[in-house]
Amino acid sequence: MTITISNLTISNNVPAGTTIGVLTAQDASGTIIPCDYRLTKGSLGYFAIAGNLLVTTWSTPATAGYYPARIRAIGSNGMFRESATFIVNIVPAAPPPPPPPVASITVNGSTNAVVSEGAALTVNVSNGPGNTADWVGLAVAGTPDTTFISWDYLSGTQTPPATGMTSATITMTAPTNDGPYEARFYPDNAFTVSARTGFSVTPPPAASITVNGTANAAVTEGAALTVNVTNGPGNTTDWVGLAVAGTPDTAFISWDYLSGTQTPPATGMTSATITMTAPTSDGPYEARFYPNNASTVSARTGFSVTPPAAPQPVITITPTTPEVPDMTPLGAVVATYAVAMSDGSPFSGTVRFAAPFFDAGGIFALSGNNIIVNPNGPGIGPNITTMTDRITLETVQ
Image (cartoon, rainbow, N blue to C red; front, side, top):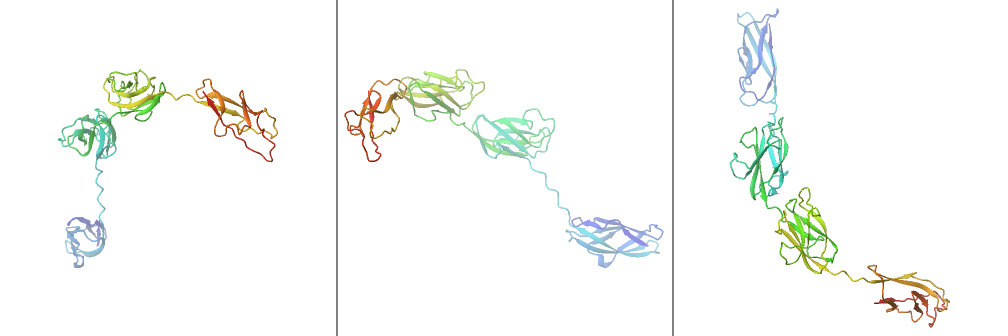
């Protein structure tokens, strides 16, 4: 007679009474013989017999390893007896599967974000369950989860996506009142929040305006100047005006929309650099920023207009460092000079020698637009070595 068992491998954390394998006894012809199965004393402790089953008996996880189980089979009619030893492999239990990822939600990519009133913000959802009716809502912090100010499906609209989404980035609009808020993630059209994050809403930064990139700039009468606006509300009809300092805000000398013209831009602009023309009269002025075609100033900066600098004469000598022989005769021309005004206007004055070098001790003289060897002077040689003589010219107007 032969004894067989259907299985010899079992996990070490199964409960007591778990079947390891089914025992079968057969005679030489292969006929199954009903038997009474028993464990020998040496096999007791980890195993037991239940009918024709080898079962576990441990109540706490067993130590993994190979364990012998000696089994005696006695035929029901008493005519057959047989024994067999089986080696049971008790193996460590497989680790449990990792828990499913937890849904998470952020605003502008972070927790506790700070956003401006009415500004666009992004709500980022990840590890959602992927239902088509998963949605997000914005709510005042501390209010019941059944309340919300605005909401969208993960499609970014109030129409659910065609297929479920486990992650999404949704553009929404921040509330227009300051304070603490929450972005909440709700699975499957329910009102049970599975993820939330706080964010705060603050007033937008104040609009600012400068002239030529600074406050209290000084510009020349009629010169081009740049008006720089930042942090505007972004209306298409926001505008800037130049006005005399101290005049009513309804008064202005010139104005432009943030487009830089008197035609508003196609879309609103929150910042701009506009080229305008300074007033032509000296004095204190202001650049003023007016939102939305109104006459209420939300930002201003002072600047002053001053007269242009007076044009200056510029003397040019050709050549700049003339070299002449030491025996050059009296009255000979050694260089020429020309005078031009810095603004291009004609020069109407005269030119003369002046400090510190004057006419090099009487060596040189002026004749028309020429610098000559003074006909009445000592001349320029003869010299033993090369000499350097210096002169200074000035204009008189």
